[in-house]
Length: 262
Image (cartoon, rainbow, N blue to C red; front, side):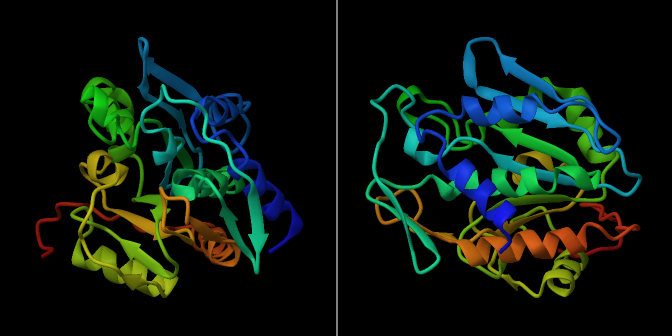
């Protein structure tokens, strides 16, 4: 792993576990340039879990890169700040109180891929708030139901979606938003193993017309004090995607093609 990538990973793992505001502000503060358009940040009034930052890509053959800014360590959102020392041992990040790699590791990858011309979507509220009866994926759910313009843009003008929020390494999940052809394409491009369809992530909500995949970013035992993040596994997915989505003509995968079987 090069030094610049390592420093970015350290930066994103150093944000407070109980607050995603700094990450959302970081992406929302990007200047419009030749590779992407002006960031759009939308919040549903005072419902901070129902928000997202959308950064449209400009390249012709583009995909949507997705990560969530919150982590399960801030699932109550009003509890005292979670604190704990963080260590690096044999290339793995560990902590006495959790490191928030579920979500934050994916945001770090989006940051390092931001200049490739693809669209970026950073959501909040992936974990929801059970005590307040707020459903998981509240940010992407609000986008789907109340932000039709962004929802249509995602599904009409992108080839497929990639989320960075899968545990372990060398694995991917498409849940119910990947055709057989798309799953085969992901296997061929990544060499990763299909880890099945159980669970639900932002792509399940967002992928209406296009296929989506969730890639491993190297974390395990997430949302516990035993959480770890393997830096080399994280870097493997980052390096793989740098090459993969730099290809000039990425194919489009329709979620409901007339001749495809799931």
